[in-house]
Length: 184
Image (tube, rainbow, N blue to C red; front, side, top):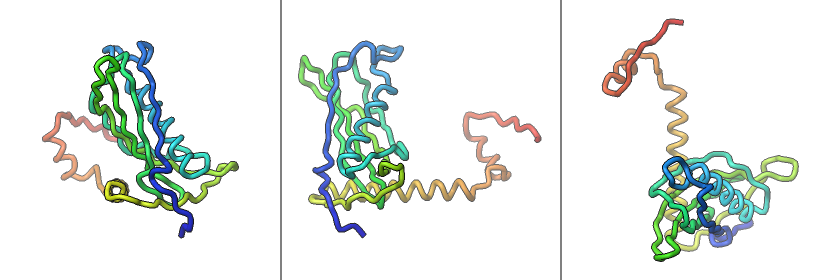
């Protein structure tokens, strides 16, 4: 068990970047892939700052694109550690876009990245424990526990579910699919 604990606040990090025409997709909005790149950068920085080690992305657990981002808006990403395991951390990230002419701010994205701490030889290393200092941090930690439990349940379901059963195949009739299975 950890004897070293760090506060959530010690992991806080934010970055801001002006959105340029070169960041757009075909509809003229900021490309989601560009935002994903920024999300991965801040998740790395946050996890590395908290753990004191190099960190790698183990999974991108949630990326919710809530509102489009326009060229000329100032995008700010805010990240903190919401959960720690032995060597892993779940990083919560909030993306806001500010119209720099009006000052109006909109919440554009919420994301959760699981990061793992590694040493200089690439071996997994333990991370400090997490000191929760307010009920919002407790809420975030509990939400991560639920997220982990759902992921385990999904993985278990994947292992035991029989996709080829008559019942499973018949249940697809209510969806917008056409089954034309070829015999192997």
